[in-house]
Amino acid sequence: MGDAFFSILVDESRDVSVKEQMIVMFRYVDKKGCVIERFIGIEHVTSTTAESLKASIDSLFSRHKLSMCRLRGHGYDGASNMSGEFNGLKTLIMRENESAYYVHCFAHQLQLAIVGLAKKHSLIGAFFTLVSNVVNIVGASSKRRDILRDKQALKVVEALTNGELSSGKGLNQATEIKRSCDTRWGSYYGTLINFITMFSSTIDVLDEIANDRLTVDQKHEAFILLGLVQSFDFVFSLHLMRNILGITNALSQALQRDDHDIVNAMDLVELCKQQFQKMRENGWDSLLEEVSVFCRDQSIDVPNMGDMFLARGRSQRNGPKITNMHYYRVDFFYEVIALQLQELNSRFNEANTELLLCLACLSPNDSFSSFDKQKLIRLAQLYPNDFSSQELEVLKDQLQTYIDDMHSNTNFSELQGIAALAKKLVETKKEQNA
Image 1: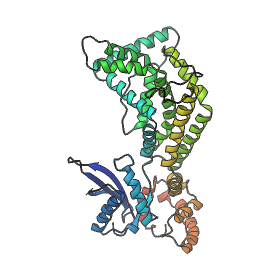
Image 2: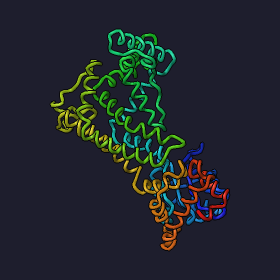
Image 3: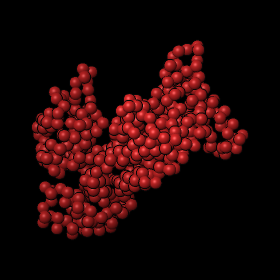
């Protein structure tokens, strides 16, 4: 590494004796211009306080003769057991080195924003638990999955016969309710879509399991789930979260692409926020109508929105004196959207966004079409320890010379990605001029 600038990636893990550990990765650009990412080691931590984690990293740096002043980036697992302590560690490092910016994987940030919503809103958390339980029971065996597919196929044929569905290539194909991945909460979007499509077939399978006299395996659990799933609360949560995950789905797909564009990703983040705000302001009536129609089709009672709300899971005597309309619209619909916006704003903050948007201007893609002199000057200003006021003035002229050189040199005309640019600059011995 020499005296190269570098970043660290830290994750948390426990060994077989349940001792807390930090797994540390280094990321840097070597003398050939290649981006290198290396596993450095496992640090056992006796305490998981931010101070203890910082001391462990200081010890690691000392053993490898590295200086904290050369650190330019750090990222941690925001979903780990030590996530709160990692937040404290981030503060301690940036207090010592303001140029060591914290940037977390954006795809993971989106997942954590959805996880954060489920953790902060008890009804949404309970809803996802219920969905997982239904999927686990209905898909517990090949026999049950076959029953589900057969029942769904019969309903599709019946709907086609009655003219309720259109036939055609790719339409009405057999589907199943797949398990969602805990670390990929965006996968719940597909699960909820299939749950809505196969709702009545799923109810039929649960009913068969609950009334099966030959086996008692999961029989009682299926009976309980039947009552919970066939409720207005569940259907309301189902459609609300389908709509919310539908908004974040495009962003989720874009962030998980290996070649995703930072500027496009940032635009999608802002678009998501705008769509949530629009949904909060204008989406209530359409959601209530959608849920009510679905409930009527499935013979599920729809509460009168003007009646007093009867709280479940708490004493009626101590429950809030509000109408159903107030509960479902204000305490449920508005609050869930507000929490999702809060999570997005917290995890995609202004500082990180500005840094990445400025950095994206270095991209050589499409003949350096993203090049923006003012944003690159702003990028330099974000590192005051590396650029003096005089150097910033000189940089304005250097950037113009740099981009003219790049446009006129065929060696740089078809590069893809900043990593490829760094490597080519070294190969052509232009790194000192860049």
